[in-house]
Amino acid sequence: MTIALNATRQEWLAARLDLLEEEKELTRRSDALAAKRQQLPRVRIDKEYRFYTESGDASLKDLFGGRSQLLVYHFMFGPDYSVGCPSCSTIADGFNGFFVHLQNHDVAFTAVSRAPLEKLQAFKRRMDWSFPWASSAGSDFNADFSVLFTPEQQRAGGIEYNYRREPPAPEPLAGKTVGEWQSRDGEGPVGQIAAMTGTDVPTYTRDRPGVSAFELIDGAVYHSYSTYARGLDGMWGIYQWLDRAPKGRNETGIWWRHHDRYGTE
Image (cartoon, rainbow, N blue to C red; front, side, top):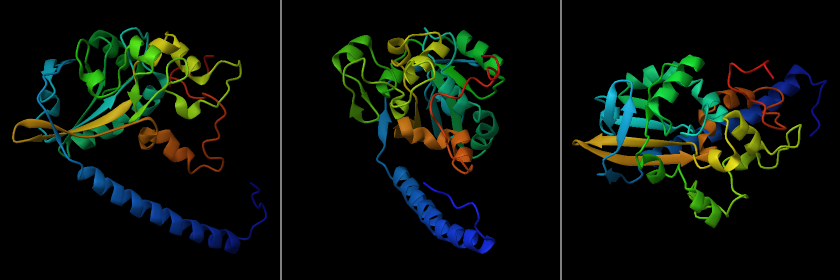
């Protein structure tokens, strides 16, 4: 694509106004999709899930904290990880700023991971995060909401993630959207991210990212919505900024890191 470098302000404004019409249409379409999300049928959750939190053991209903709505970020941090997934961590860097606003708008928010609570708390201190983070260790919660899979499912092609079935390993993988990228040392992108968590690719990709929404109605918990993979694009605060930068996302590999690791490698 060739970009004109000698445009007049009037030429720029004409092109900008054309783009503005498309942006407005995208906004209207986004509003319409949001309304459709809210109209999805609800599924009652009668299964008892137990979580470990800084305040003690909790049920799914307890995570609402007296509010009528609950948003859960399925954070990739399995029990064998040494640290949390750097991609999830990049998303989570924005949680501190907004979760308090959600909590004051009748919406509870928490991240949930399978790693033991002590491991989550240690990493949370390292990252200087304050948002709620619960451990689902020993619970079926992650598997039931399609963000945890077994080695057998990996080998046999039994993984259904993002509402589609994946082929048997080693083809799948959680980083499918960057599957065509090549890192500088020739290592695949998913392997590169797995190494940042202290795991190998199969171990790393048994856990997956996602967002799930729940509603409390007449004392019962209902599941209303879940999204995965590129459905999480809007949660990447940095991408919303990069999409407005002159060169856009400008990606040729895994460039992000845990925020305290830039300049150390």
